[in-house]
Length: 220
Ligand SMILES: [Mg+2]
Image 1 (cartoon, rainbow, N blue to C red):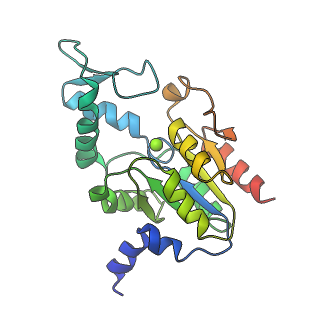
Image 2 (cartoon, rainbow, N blue to C red; image 1 turned 120 degrees about the vertical axis):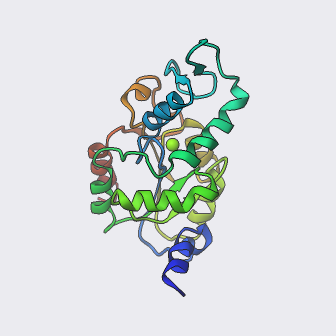
């Protein structure tokens, strides 16, 4: 297998599952857990003459035309986010301390980044994360994360830990893989203030110093 084929295979959920052993598996979301998604999205929207108002914990309904103040119809949100990924996926800053924490954790955990990045942007996202010092397999998902977490949990002998900023994803994983340890984490302080702990999370931790301590504590 060539090096590039190997790298590609590492990002395929099935191939990744085939490499699992009895080490605990840590599945980490990217946007707003490892990467400062909203901050970069705001700048992108500004470049498009739009404005994101962080009045509630959602994007849809919170995007406005800067000049007229008119709300962008929620039906347009998906298209905007899709365009954002094409334009900016490899230009998003890392969340402080994330890379160093994952590096230290990588001796004890198998780590994969489970991201709802569009499949066409997966390699760019993996390269960007590697550039930030987070060279881990990037599993590109779409929609609910519960089913893929279920299939990975079925193929590992160790415990599974899941981290995400979105409560519906935490709930999805709780429904499909109830044995997982679920952590709710929101990196952006402005977003973090808008939302409490996700109902189906075991714990809410917003910074990587606390996350690292908790993740090492789970092994004890
Ligand atoms: Mg996210």
